[in-house]
Length: 360
Ligand code: CDV
Image (cartoon, rainbow, N blue to C red; front, top):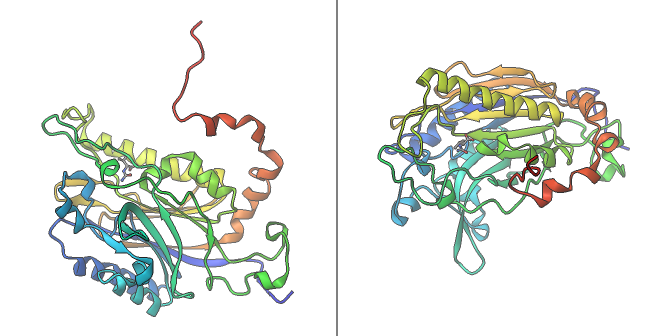
């Protein structure tokens, strides 16, 4: 065995919270703002920055758009042309991250080119490794909220993700990020079961996007791959009109407090139950008149919030974490291999909607 990993696996990570990206904002201006956050990250010794869902554009699913309008929001991800890291309107961001030796996880609207030249659109986040100089992880949003057809009531708030994106087809694929931890265990070290080894491999990462964080299933699938850090960007409306066009029956302040409560419950509860850190990053502020909640948080595997945004603007939220802190949960309360009773979970796979027991 050649690795000489220290007993702690410290890493400085950050959430690259973004303020609003308005419809008229140029792509260059958004990339510039993200590069400024990366500059700050470099000065604070950060090794990983997570950016929000659809970070490069306004949250366009709130608008009913024709094909031509829609096209401008998507970035073509063509594997034969080097994928998203080489896409002309985004390349500068990845190059900048690499120049600082910082990994980034970033959300964007993906127009995926198919082998026959057609395309499929997804709400996607990729993980770019500065060490590898390429994308090493990709996730396409599974739990798309909203509707295909726009709500017809006057003043209704639209959420047209089901119209514009195909549900993700990659599942919840955890992956390892190289170059972040010195002396990480490698395949060449010949350890057959890394989960049982005292030495640990490179950090295990999973990605979720916005609404996914409310669904225990995705987190658990990551938990079952030993995931240590979940990266989750979001655009969450702070308060909005209903599909019927009416206002919710709460004040704007009460509605926003409720949204924040549910956001934090989801991130803190699922981080705890899967013994992983999570970096949960907002696009926030008032985007073309539409209030987005903030609440960017970095959560510890014990469920506590260890860092939280103070603003609703571009802000780097930084935390030093020790990946060894995942061990307690993974080896005791949530030692899945000892305590899960999979023979009783069949219904989770067989049923989507609830079917109530017979009436008495
Ligand atoms: N972008 C999102 O996925 N938004 C959802 C809303 C619609 C509930 C969210 O979970 O924040």
